Structures are given as C-alpha cells and as structure tokens.
Length: 95
Image (cartoon, rainbow, N blue to C red; front, side, top):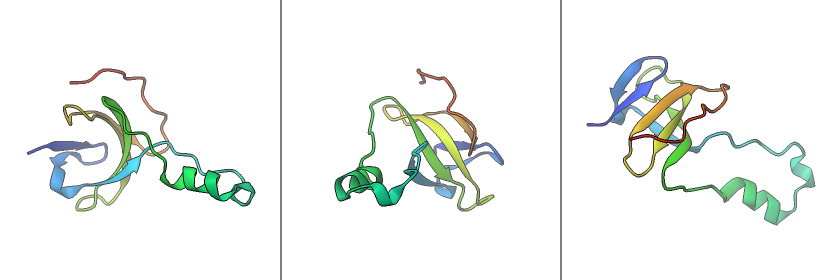
C-alpha cells in the first residue's frame, strides 16, 4: 500500500486521499478579457510530465485539508508534501 505523507497528519494510506490535479495554477487576473481559446487553455491544458510533478491533494478521509505534493510520476513515489500557499520546493530528482 502506498503511504501518502500528509503535512498535517503524517503518513496515511493512499485510500484516504483524492488527487486534485496540477498545483500552482494561477487564476487569470482578468477572466473577462480572455477569449474562448485562452479560457479553454486555462481550464483544460495541464502538463503531464514524466518525472517530478507538483500536484494538489485532499486528505478526504482524514483532516479534510488540501496540500501540495511533489510526486515522481514514473515511480509513483512522493518526494515531499507541503502546505497550500507555500512555494514549490526546489527538488528535481526523486526515487
């Protein structure tokens, strides 16, 4: 079983969590100024790298809090987790 290191509760089983997609996506400052193509780009275009990826996670069956995680998409290993609002750690490797 994969253990996810919740920054609030510590390591917990993966079944307690839900992935919320890519982290650090900024909402457009003036959404009314976007045309349909730019709005679609904001809503639907996401990176899907092979390697380290920043994601948002919800501890749905625990503390109920959102946090960010750096996860290696090749090995599925969590490299680090950090609270929402904190900057992305400068980590490039991972297991």
